[in-house]
Image 1 (spheres, rainbow, N blue to C red):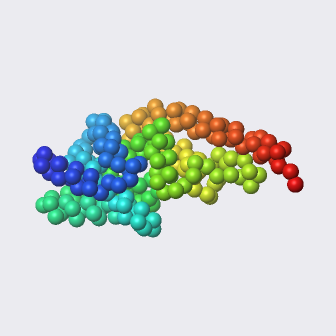
Image 2 (cartoon, rainbow, N blue to C red):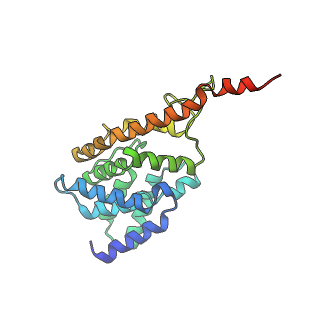
Image 3 (cartoon, rainbow, N blue to C red):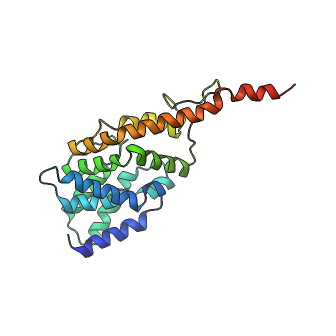
Length: 226
């Protein structure tokens, strides 16, 4: 890939970024992690991988505007048309689109190509460890969801089996369960090294917020009179 092509892709990516949890720095972390993973694999098309990494979240704004849309599918289409407009060949543009549309954790269409699997893994690594927790809290705040919800008895739910969206619910549903979901050995190794720090953070924050509620209502009731 020529330098001017890379700069054009980067500029387009930056014009699409409007979410602090999925900003350009997230994009570059994913890209650099993907390049690390690629060193441990054979026959990786680096041009496809770099382009897909840079453009993988360009459909985020459309999903914010309409939550029924999938940013991976929207982003894949946007990337394809951008690349065609900028004189990349159709085969290349299609490979990039396929990588992007299958990178989402919740998608029902798993990645097939090696480049798509590396993108998937690199993107998921950025949701592991404490960086993943920090990004998730940023995202939850951006869309107006709370840290936690309460059980019927007024105590803090740790997120297990919650239907109400919150950071705790997202941790139990997604973040806690990422570590055996990678396609490449290198990604699994990187993620496993971060697992304990994420689990420790979650355990501590649950304990800290639960402390306030353990006797708080009883203490308040002592001061309230009919």
